[in-house]
Image (cartoon, rainbow, N blue to C red; front, side, top):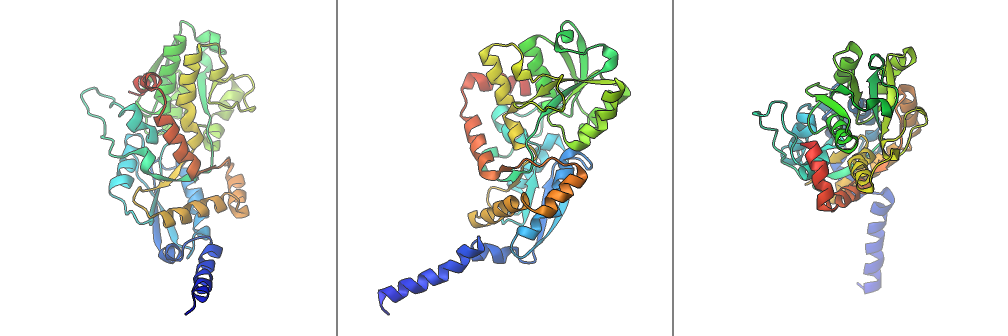
Amino acid sequence: MPSSRLLRLSVAAFVPAVLLGAPVGAAEFFKDKQMSLVASGSVGGGYDLYARHLARHIANHIPGKPKLLVRNMVGAAGVIAANHLYNVAAQDGSVIGQLQRNVAFMPLLGAPQGKKKKKKPTALKFDGRKFHWIGSPQQELGLMLVAGKTGVKTFEDLKGRELTTSSTGRGAATSVYPRLMNEVFGTKFRVIEGYKGSQEALLALENGEVDAHTSGGSSPNFRNRFAPWVKEGRVVVLLQMGLEKDPAYPNAPLVVDLPMKAEDKQLFELAFAEQVMGRPFLTPPGVPADRVKVLRDAFDATMKDKAYLADADKQKLEINPVRGERINKLLDAVYSRPKDLLDRLRRAAQ
């Protein structure tokens, strides 16, 4: 057969796969597949809401329209789920996961210590850079909430005051952010750790168990919970913990806009890098590249799906997506930051 005819046949055979947007083998793999989404957040929390929301829609954009069931795997601030996804879960694309945004940084910053010093922290058996990140439907912003009964209404009011603040665990943003405040500004937050999730930590503020709560994020569910307290004067939104200010809280300044040394500002910027990851979804590291592409393409398509967006609007879920490739690049950049800066953040996370 002439070489030109061979070339035409080769091109003709390749075209359908390109037009489908995914390698044929990957498309066939997902047909009628029973898939699992391992979510590390507690049921009813912000992470869980985004996980179940995505699960209802993304399968419509995966070739073969597989079924996708959510499985909550809570514990150790997301480390248990991360270890499972990295070492135990199927590495074929049938299992995807959702982790707390700070989990991928833990191998770099060190394992968070347990509440009791004698208790060893859960071992970190994963490398956050080696997960294939699918994307996040949202970018985040943390908020510092202070009980009105404390009399604290501005940043200046914090000086000389000791305030207790609720947290889920040592390595979580709910602990790290207050400790960074103590280091940089000399505030006196005393972090009370061990709450099972954001809703329980927020309940502690409502019940008067603690004086404050500093969140790592601010999902609509989270905001709706404390909105009446703000209106009634029982809670003040004191500061915004992130890189971009939310105009919904005009009287609460961004921490990075407060007067501080340049190296301290860089420290906060490094700490807030995780917020770009929002509510991130991923695949285990061993998933073949063609199947990773299928899942990333499906995620990107879902973020533009009218039904998905309408469902998000109904649930008051903010959609401001980040692509998976950007998350992997972000992690590579953070892991390459200067050692002295990483050491400071590492100390705050341990």
